[in-house]
Structure formats: C-alpha cells, structure tokens
Image (cartoon, rainbow, N blue to C red; front, side, top):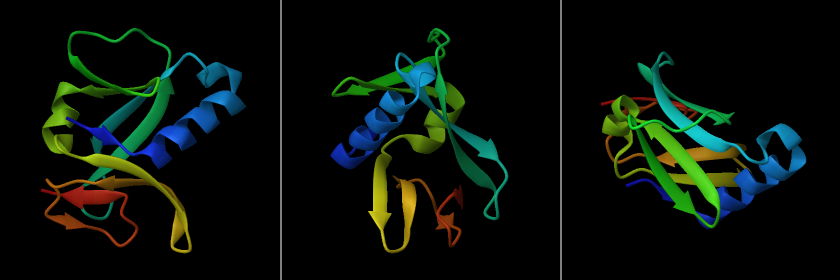
Amino acid sequence: MIDLTDKAVKEIKRIQNSDPSHQNAHLRVQVVGGGCSGMSYKLDFESIPVTDKDSVFEKDGVRLVIDKKSYLYLSGTELDFSDGLNGKGFVFNNPNAKRTCGCGSSFST
C-alpha cells in the first residue's frame, strides 16, 4: 500500500489543473538507480494505459501508478507534500529506506 496525504493529493490536483496535458493523466512513481544514496524517486505524469505489471492506488480522484519492481522498495510508503521553510516538494516517508541523503530525494535499503 502507498498512502497519499491530503497535502499531496491537493498539490497533484493543482499541477493537473494547471497543465491541460496532465488533466487526465495518472502519476507514475518509480525507483531508479542514482542519487547520492544509490536509488532515487522519479515522479511523472502519464496518459498511457496501466498494465497488469502496475500497482494502482487512488485517493480523492488522484491515481498513483507504480511498477512491480519499484513497489518492492515503496511498499508502506507515505507520499506527502511539504511547502515549509526547509523547501517545497514531494516527500517520501519510506519505511524501507535504511539511509537517505540530506535532500531526501535518494535512499538505500
């Protein structure tokens, strides 16, 4: 399971409404190699159909899609959005991450 906070849902909807190409798209979350801790998160809007190799999570009309390999690293993660003093952006609260970098965009297990 991947949990979307209310703040994350609100920001995703704001982005979708501000760009016509994102209005009917789902948000794909992936784990890719790279970053200072070994693996990093990738977010992208897609309009291509979901396959049987994807896990799909929905909250309040926002559709989050994750491929099976990435889901192994993301199971139990909470996707939040922060607009506080420490920066603005999506935040992954990932219980599978053993180490994260200072910016929070990469991790290792």
